[in-house]
Image (cartoon, rainbow, N blue to C red; front, top):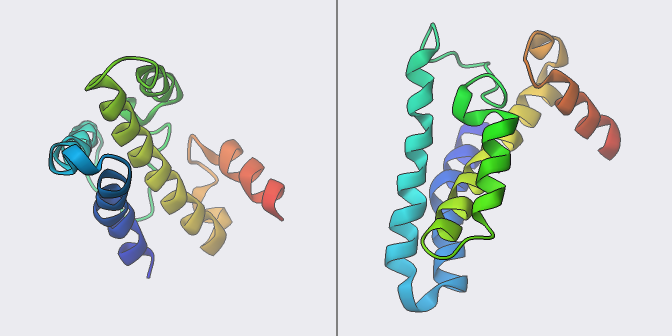
Length: 127
């Protein structure tokens, strides 16, 4: 179920955002949203490149807190930068939700994760 949710949030949810909020240019906006997934290229810097139980937030350089601040700053710029910022922040939110699902399933599995404190804070906030 986690995989289904993850890919819906990466592919389906951006489609809905593009179609509902950018009706006139939804195809172009959706394409930009899809292109923001190139942010995952930073995964090739990790060893191993893929690890099923790894939380991307704060682990990969383009998924770090400073990078996320830059993505948030893009929201205050003109198109297409604003749309790129929305896409990147949706991507980070999707990855954070994925991390939270892993955290809820096995808190101990993520003790060494760089975002552990954030995940623990979010978990305690909603508990």
